Image (cartoon, rainbow, N blue to C red):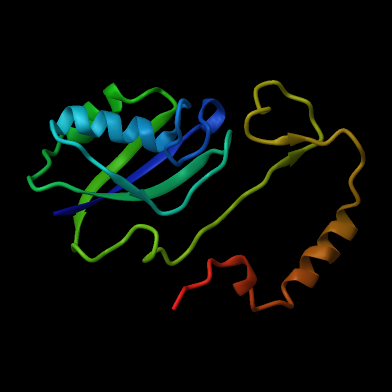
Length: 158
């Protein structure tokens, strides 16, 4: 059976999503905890990847597991996971559904602040110089003229 997992994480102490040697990643923590609790090796496929220090408000991944998952499993998993990762839901999907290739939308948010606040430093960039909001808005309108963003996509190999 294939399961989707919906989660969020604060990436401050992680070296991104994808497993890497000798550093802590979100995927590594999830796989470790799932494998221990389900008592079998679990491999996760994420809908995307994040870089070092990047957070995710809502992320999806999938994994395969041959048994049913109990209703209270998410609660058990969240106890076992570090406080910087929270699983919202785990639900079965069709075997051919893929977290990365079947994703229909991705949203990235970047926050700037003019107020220096140590409690927001992990979630926004403190901009200490004046911003010209009118010019910023004009530049963002210019971006809306474009429809082809294929240069930002991974090319399929034949």
